[in-house]
Length: 335
Image (cartoon, rainbow, N blue to C red):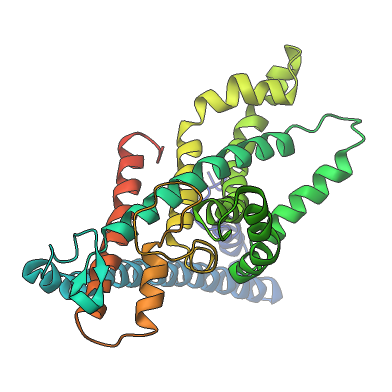
């Protein structure tokens, strides 16, 4: 019984404490050995108490962080809803904020054209961005041994990560001097249109989509790689036939994040979409998104009906992103 090993406890130092305490009982006499055992016992006890205190402190910090995050989001929704509710209830001439005419000089403050522009631009940017991101992710995850383009794959992966740190205004200036003149020369018009903004937004959300897909698909591919190799399948075949069919949640998450990034961006629609407050009728026509509309109005208005309508626009943006996220969870995207 005296030499039986004690079961390990929740702390890494606890197993060392029991043998020291047993040895101290055996060396209960006087001398240096007994004093040494007493010091070791005290050290291990202090370590256990310190670990317990650190655990309680970490739990308190975690609960405080969750409380601050949830409280901040709740306050944000409540503040925007409080300012938007009077605009919604009182309305105004021509249908209030939910009308198709934005003409502050005539007292019309409809935001439906901007809502249509945000949704149209978000969808047309998210779909090609998601497709390109999926193809690029599969290519980055399927390098074969002995491939001569391995260095090029690594450089491409590094470039994708660097793109996440590039400011949005850099994309905008590049499009103003390169993409807009090319579209103006090839298709006519001013070059500042739905098509121009959609192409640049697709490029903007590409790194986000690729990194989200890599984070979700790489562990699944690693788990099935050895059995798949034994069956003679390449990494690309494993991705296509095994990993992708079982990764609906990851695919939907990447699509939703890309759509939210496209809808929530301000600088590119402001610089490239033309900012016409009308519903677009073609990809070469100008449009105005809710985010660009809020930036333009706040730069010229402080107070008044036009300024108050922006709170309704902000509430619509929050509700759109919340609705998309809830739909994702209901369809199993959060699994």
